[in-house]
Length: 331
Image (cartoon, rainbow, N blue to C red):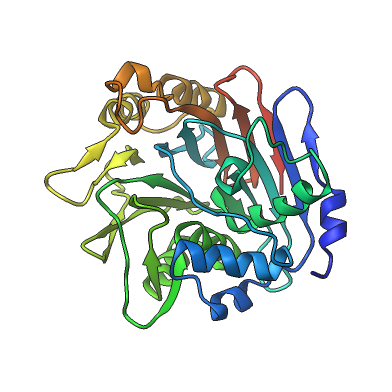
């Protein structure tokens, strides 16, 4: 793959924060992947391997709980905040500069493509080579237009659309959005023109936001895409792991939702980045606190927290619930 070795030279582990980083200058051939097909986990992973890894096997399957919300700073900067919650985490910051798309930065969990404490990405050259697949496993991110998107699990929203449109899996949809969407309207249109397929045996929904202050939640109910727009009269717009678009509001995460909702309403969703990170701290996942043993989220905890500032294209990242230490990066 052209540019792969230049990209791999940028691979590094950021000291003291357990965060990996990759400046993706290689052509990851998004349009070719879409034409080859990505309608199932196996097809998606196999074609990513063919395009990026010369056939080296790798899996790409997101999971986790997660929380997201939007807020404005007192200076009217737009923010999308996010906790990524899972049993284990190994965060990779992927910065991309595609020839035919917007520059972006995104966070992937290297655990979702086969790495763990016994198989670290820096272990050998083959492992570093496999990290190239992280470009197709983003769980949240922001592009140069000030558009951001994140995915949360929603157990009952397992989706397998089949209407003859281009088939995409969950994280491939995020890569498409970061490369192609300039704002929330663009993002909605992109998702309306693909067939969404859930990765694994679990459902997902998305929250997106832009620097104009627009935000939307995208859910899939009985394979039908549902768009929930931010109400200008209601400053509170957050998301965890239950459906917003159904009367039953099926799912979990209501405790974390209520924590975020209370603070957002109290502050009219106008908060400094410091206050936003403090709210992410309050709403962090502690599966042992909220769930009984045996529950799918019982061993989950917050693996990373990130605030995307859509107005100045910066991100503040905290790893492993160490909310007093943040890594700041700009596009």
